[in-house]
Length: 241
Figure 1: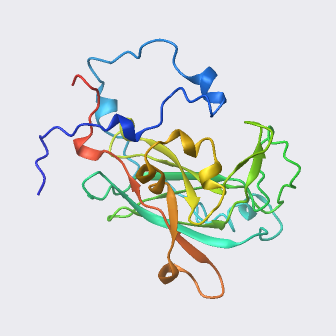
Figure 2 (figure 1 turned 180 degrees about the horizontal axis):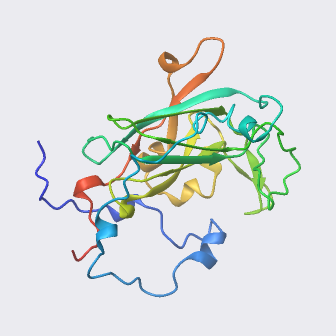
Figure 3 (figure 1 turned 180 degrees about the vertical axis):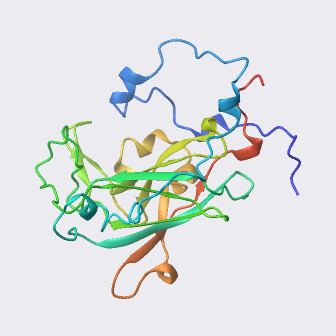
């Protein structure tokens, strides 16, 4: 059993630097001045929100069907997959009834977004967004299409690996995590300037979904497991707290 009062130091080398010239848009977005540490966090930063009363649609976590609810005529094109896993704190304690949101490109590598000008076509049957709540043991699940890689203007021939964006809320607003799930075996992962902002190979491994044949549906969907770890009850809210 862990002592809930003990201090758990954050490993600053685990996280990517804000200023990473190889990832060109980070240059303009990185802070130019020292960060300010808040002395007195508010109650909303130390607890909540409570998602247990959030009403979910019948297909919110099924991207094969949820765009049909908006009038799409059929099923999307691409490799059907299941994405699943657990949301836990750093000691393996589940985070129940929390909101997991995801968004992604379609099978051709194009987002349903007005600023996406990639020449791959939009899929008229795919919206690319989903959400669900974790259960009592922290489990979440989505059914979707495996997204395609796509080019981006970081340098003359940069390509993003196939990935799914994920946002998960821990036990408080300050534990929200936004990350990306990559697919094991993708040769573009080590070539990606965003991935290479991480200098610890073990940190990169935490963002890779693993093929799980036991959870795959025969003649339907392969499954990829992607567990999400938030700092939970033993989080360090601020360095001086």
